[in-house]
Amino acid sequence: MKEFTYYQPKSVDGAIGLLDAKWGKTELLGGGTDLLDLTKEYVAQPDKVISLTGIANFADIQVAPQTGKGSVVLIGAGARLAAIADHAHLQKIFPALTTAAGMIGGPQIRNMGTLGGNLCQRNRCWYFRDEHVHCLLKGGQKCFALDGENQYHAIFTQGHKCVIVSPSTLGPVLIALDATAEVQGPKGKRTLELAKFFFAPSGENEREHVLAPNEVVLSVKIPEKEGTRNASYEVRQKQSYDWPLVQAAVAFKADGGKATGVKIVLGHVAPTPLVVEAAAKEVEGKEVTDAVATAAGKAAAKDAKPLSQNGYKVKLVEVAVKRALLTAANPGKRQYWEV
Image (cartoon, rainbow, N blue to C red; front, side):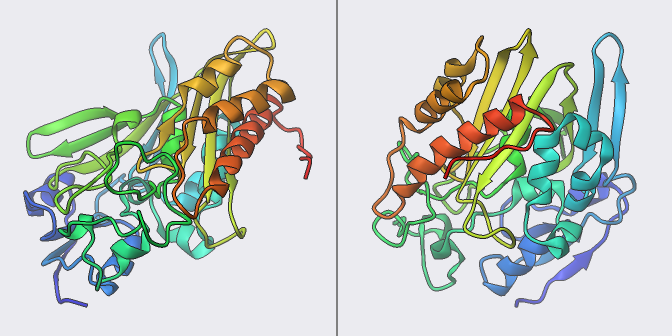
């Protein structure tokens, strides 16, 4: 591991002042669960590591009323995944978020990992993580996964030079819930829709998000909408210490037994979380029955273009969407799935 200088500023302004205008020279530290791996793998070799753990209120979770608009939930970027998963108010109104947070890694990871880190983490492609492989995202000329070992890579690959999958499990849920992120840089603060937060990189000077090298995520805001149903469903090889093979996050308003304002977002199947409007149209204005959920799942998978070794993910998309919809439509009711 390369030697670096460690900083622990007491304010966001102090942290931003230490950041470099180019990627690679400085790294932010929240929980460190990803940064530790990156430095040990020689993928990240920063001169400076800037810890955000000394900033006051950076990990707060608040419910804030808005005049005439109901309430919003404000989650600091430093909030631990375990705190999100165990938060009683979030469990009541946003079960999709607490379920997703509670399934990330194991207890040790959840007690260290943060909201900001989950949104901004680097991809998990084994070619990218191998210090000996000079892939596209490290200045090379080739995505080795296109013709190599790609069983865990993207199945929605159209227009993408690099076929990584977005590793964020909270991202698809927050997009489905219409969340926004507050970001601060040298020019001040700006607000980003989570749907526009993620980016499909194809070179070493790009990241899996749209942030500039000297910007910091401050918090995420989620509007509370009366009558909203939401759920997240993951398919994975084992139940802990693993990234999902496929994830589906859904949200809709239950209006007279019919679903309206339907949003369906896929995770771990494309370089960014994928909003599938065709699937949402299959549900909009209808009662969420088994048949409707099945049709939505098929619509979600329709445009998939799997690689040589990951065609199995197409069926998993159908299953995940169906089960997420049925879970959201029947809150508190245990679902029994056909094998």
